[in-house]
Length: 425
Image (cartoon, rainbow, N blue to C red; front, top):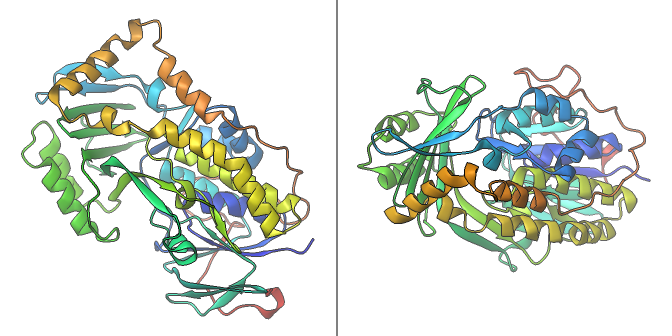
């Protein structure tokens, strides 16, 4: 079987996971990422249920992930004076294994040894030809690839270029989230504290020696540039203006936080995950929204896509069809799990906040106290992974690490250069 020359747009989670599998089977993989480097920090993400944990095992990174899990405790719910009202058990939100997104990104980067990483650049056009896809970039010379994978998030440029408005729906779930690091400990250690006001929720968590804040607020779809960080900060500041508790100090820290992240809670719904030689992976094709296990879904999607490409001997038409057929029911289950997150995170009336807090207070004493976790685990387990043959040829999988320096024999980080005629399609 001829090795494929694959371009992946997006160097966060889904892209490096796919690169890991493709490199192992001998394909030539280039990842292009708009950010200047791997993004540190980020919110905690989790894996739960047999299939998600099994994917970590098959990738050879489960041990590395478990070594860097947060061991997060409960989140205490407080009023505006800091008085305890209730608590949110970690069993509900931490899954079986929880890890900071930045640490997971580093592990996946190091596990994709042999892939070419290109930072600080992005795709500007795609043109499919009988022999491949002609790709142009903001900074690098044009190149041709056999396949292009969009793993570049809910604002996917690849989706925009390859699919346009062809049936794509960004389903807004009624809230926005900002997340960033803050100085100090707030008296926390592997624990969190949360305060709600109508339509708004502020959470502070400290784990792995790092304190992070999350500011969530209810809002209809807002018009803003998703790359304009200052405008996004203004939206957050306006939403939380006038609130007490620790919120003024959080807003002050937000203005200088280098890792500031802002996004809507939204789902991506598409009639198809592929168009010709272009295919979407992770949030770019089927973002589930908060509580929809997006990280686990992305890693399972990468496993399924790589496995179907191998099973189809590189025939992308067959592989893409099987990938969608196998994954779509799981995507729909995960998206269903995420609906209604706004009613829990940002209740818009004081009475609704009170009822939520009372429910959390009574949860340990109720016979169905484990129901929420069981429901989430059941949704996460709603797929049976195929036993794809182990890849033959290609470099051995790199030992996954999460240090600050690139692996000595791991991915190459380069500026994208002219196409290599020997490796062209």
